[in-house]
Length: 268
Image 1 (cartoon, rainbow, N blue to C red):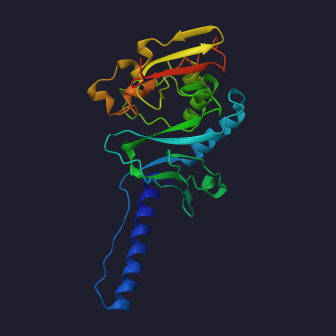
Image 2 (cartoon, helix red, strand yellow):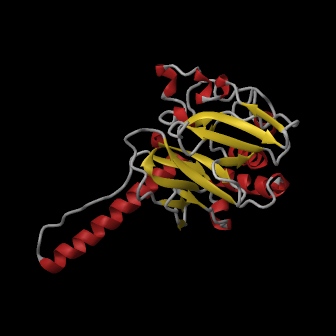
Image 3 (cartoon, one colour):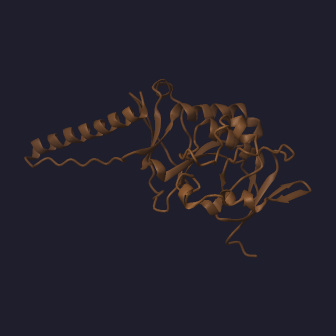
């Protein structure tokens, strides 16, 4: 079943259910029937099969981050997007499985064989261009304001495998068309896999033992190459000041390398 057909069927099912309920109420009360349908036109959705493949990639490459769990994370693309009260579900031909979303808008995706067979979609109650998705791999116990490079390498592999990249313009070079596999994207300096910090960043440093290096400016703010026309197609759209590239392809930096952030609002 195509996703478009699935969306139509789901919308009709909601409408039919609401109509039947309203008709029953009208018959019992003698009042005119009123139908209220709460749905989202053109909702955000991802392929359930692809996201499961991302989870399988996480299991195969878990040595990159042996102590970290896998979650998925929803992030806003537009300043008007209300990220409160997001609901998520797995929608197939015969299944509709709610997926709990945490307060930070992260979630764990359950495995369901029926949903896999039916090529289900993971559907959120937001419009297509309103949010972006990321894999979230974070080793517990890291110092505040830091990430671990091995975690980020695994995030990239999972995110590309799961089809989470949200850019839609054929002219936007955020990930080159020539780089399509997780290995090509995540192991190449031209892969350009964007990461998002928690807050607007002033600088980003790498630290591995005695070795320390500050990322150059062109690795911050999505490279500073986005024009107004292109920015609408990038999932860095409203969080440009939180974006950065990390040298996940550079094997001279070990997996335990710490990525340290200096944020805009930090005191000098």
